[in-house]
Length: 234
Image (cartoon, rainbow, N blue to C red):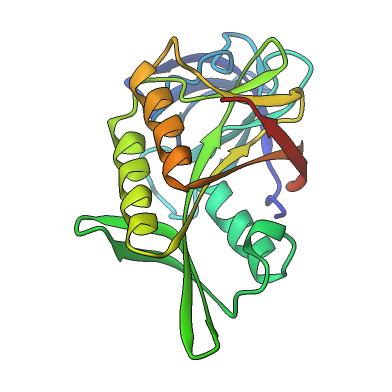
């Protein structure tokens, strides 16, 4: 996935969850929209270089969206709208082995009564419909070379695990994808100290048959690509 031309600046502060003040190269301070509801622990570092995308809607209150940050050496994409688009493109191109062999890849499909799956994969095999329900989570937190999720308590994420489990119990397949939007990590682990309920729920979902896949990305100012998979430690 390629990014449009980005504007570089320095992060002054992130506040009220969805806003960040950034000083651009020539000294002008702008307020950027933050497309991430998490805490951005280890990413929202005051003074860190950041890259912004001009808003698609002219005249919007926030003229920019915050896309990238370099808190240390590694470049990190914090936009939670990116993972679903990349996973969908790679799945349709048959580049994700866990999702290869399906004929249809449909994003944002209602399921479980009150949820929408990030992706539904379907194929008819021997007059039977095979389905795989996919949830994609953006991962930006890295500690001790381990990519960790979540970076804040997530009741919504736990709800998705329960829904995936119900899909498996009903005879379908289910896959939880952790899309790691940085490359400075070697394994994936649930952040049990931040949200122990989510860690417990993830392990319970895996025991019930939900598969887990952690994808590590290569992030550059010109775009983001899937680099490889990470070992998952539960």
